[in-house]
Length: 209
Image (cartoon, rainbow, N blue to C red; front, side):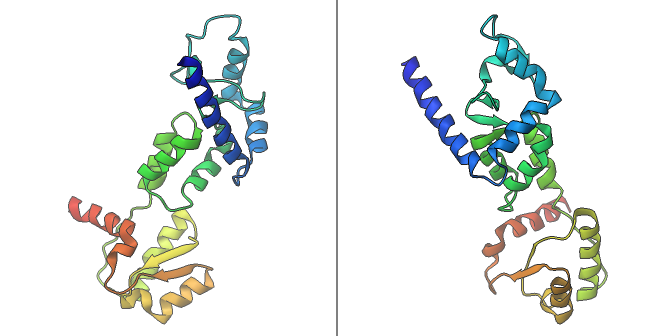
């Protein structure tokens, strides 16, 4: 039974590494960064020595026996690839490409990658998309003023999704998106479920208030 489990785990790991090889962040990049990553150096050396001594120590608070070396290039934890710190930001960006919330991002990371504190990093990047503003006027100019402030902190978005309210359906709003290279998408009328994530974000400050 144990040998069958090990074979099954190896097949899962091989599948994951095949997937990693065709992802935007290439396998070779992870391998190169792993080789020069100071945070992973002691773990790498410990894994190479593990055949000579016990594997009961911990690294990053995780039992050493959960780690291994694959193809003498990268470190898996189980079937997930251990990501060097220098690749962390790009991995988070790729996980967030589908504009997922923290739960979906964590589930996706759990299938492919691992790094120390990745759950907190995911939580930080998703919690920071929620902003609410108090305004005395409901106009395109007021909306754009707050949007510009948000963009100054987080950067220019590729896509903006809004409902069909006149403040975001105006020529002024559309001109702003066009000049900044932003793709403006509106939800179908009377169909709020099409932007369910936004509706959930709106509900958060409502509940707090």
